[in-house]
Image (cartoon, rainbow, N blue to C red; front, side, top):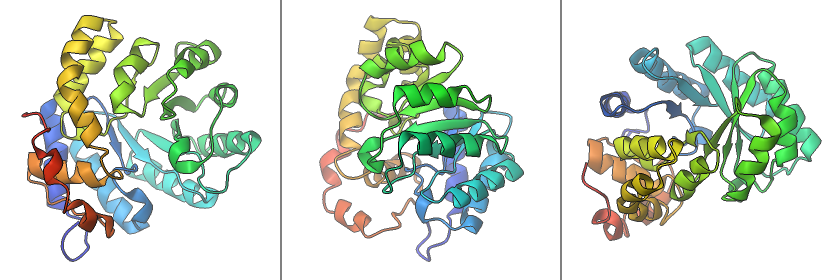
Amino acid sequence: MTDSGKIDIPSLRNLLKFHLDSGTDNLCILGTTGEASVLTMDERAQVLTTAVDMVKGKMPILAGTGTINPNHVKEMTQQAIDLGCDASLVVTPYYVKPPQRGLIKHFTDMADLGLPVIMYNIPGRTKVDLTPQSTAICAEHPNIVGLKDATGDLDRVKEIRSLVGDDFLLYSGNDDTASNFVMRGGDGCISVTANVAPEQMHDLMVAALEKDAELVQRINWPLMGLHKNLFVESNPIPIKWAVSLETACMCRKLTILFEIFSTSAHHTHHKIPSM
């Protein structure tokens, strides 16, 4: 954001170019790290239009369209369709703690709109957990193509894989355990760390997919401090500070939490690997 509270389109374009130049595999935009929950529909349109203009056809565009209100999820998903996104990332509705049948209906209703859906399970933030069994039911819908799992439970990977088959995409939502997640049967990571270390995270995921444990350890070891330090405070406070250093992007937090981080950011500076 600019000092006046507007979307900083030039900096967004710089960040997108950074990922194009770095060989980022896929773009996940308007997620938690992008603070989509506090953006208006017009602001979302500005971000998505910019992303489609710059990277459409060069990497898939996964747009976050999840929130608590199903009607608003449909509105945001339709916007993503109209603007040319390739898939939607839909989080479990937070705060209201819907039962499993409610979660299944929520995801299948969104998938009925026609855009491929990646479900997002992050009970630490939403206080509701999409079970492996419910995931399998949702996976029967032809437009529900994957799951971002941020439960931190690596034992789930094998269980979910056994229920959904090999074609369903399983993405880790935790950078610090992503390589183990993939080596246990996952397909990749929707990553916070990749915002500042995209090449390293790409190489890490490739090594994990190839089950090369030695190479995984060699790549991941220098990143472990970064994984940890990017969560010394609530995401996206640390990552926005780090991105501003790495890309000269004027990323300013939309809430007062940024003020808190500005007093402690120096503690992580020396931990960020050189690019």
